[in-house]
Length: 403
Ligand SMILES: Cc1ncc(COP(=O)(O)O)c(C=O)c1O
Image (cartoon, rainbow, N blue to C red; front, side, top):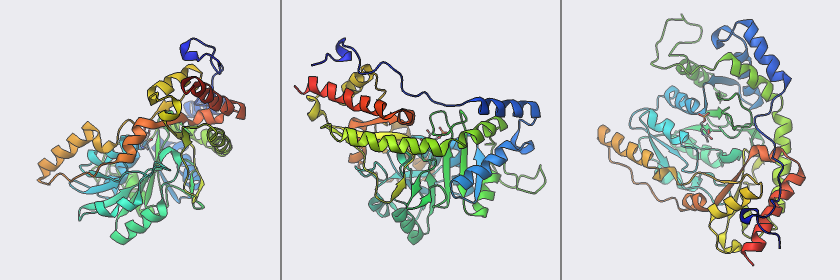
């Protein structure tokens, strides 16, 4: 039996997985062209505007509004929709904190369903119980780039006259039931932060099929101006969330690679899921059959300590890392239990004279926090041999710990 790397043995692999971000002379040229053009600012340039059109078209949407980052995209949508103090938005507790923060930062109370154990996406069956007269929108997150059940979510939203704001920050190129995500709901938000499947270092985009929503978002990202009106006419109270031309220029080049990279991630994710299904105690998430294509921003799996001699998840992560596999644990707790969110909801409700809404427990999300694992999308840009190494490292650890 091979000695584990964590115990001083040779690691399963010593070569690194593909690095991220990936770029070549095309990004370099785009940056230099922007530099020499002297047009560094989106209102006076063409890069951000072209990227808005190209990215919206890529996501099967009519309109795109670029913003500084994904967090800003969510906040701009809420402000554009007039979602305000004391309103409520129903979302998922298993997401990056920005999803819930965007609600709180506009004075709105996030309410949380639990997630489904197979997909880790919001459980649509729990939405209706959370709807109150103050509910204004549902904010599903396509976690890890895997679309949430937009059929059920949009049906509930229509029935109760609620908006759907998709948090597609991890879901570039993801397809639900034959349509790209983002503009299936009323508005959708993307992030181009450093880890994302295309990146400008930072950056964000709102997409929509509705010109009125796009115009309102444009206004909110541009200090309350109105398209086509005088430059110093600011009828809407808003801040500056504009993207710079550098990012637009880089993101246009990144977009040219996304299809090939998404295909590679999909093929490797399917291969890895099959390889790991042979390892007792490791269970990859299972996409909803209506998902045409996930973005595979993260490859996710459940870890069962019983199959690994009872060793807890952090120990497995350390052992895998020592074997050269960059696996991590993900979000540690449901956002419904995050102290900063719980406290803010309490303070806000007190100031607004509202009762603090009761939050049902989220046992599935709690369990994911304890036993959920992630591999980042860049790992999925490797070869099938790289995927074999991941499964082989897990088998090696299991042989030692479960013997
Ligand atoms: C699901 C989700 N929502 C929102 C965001 C916020 O995006 P950004 O980091 O660009 O502000 C992220 C980014 O990490 C995310 O993953």
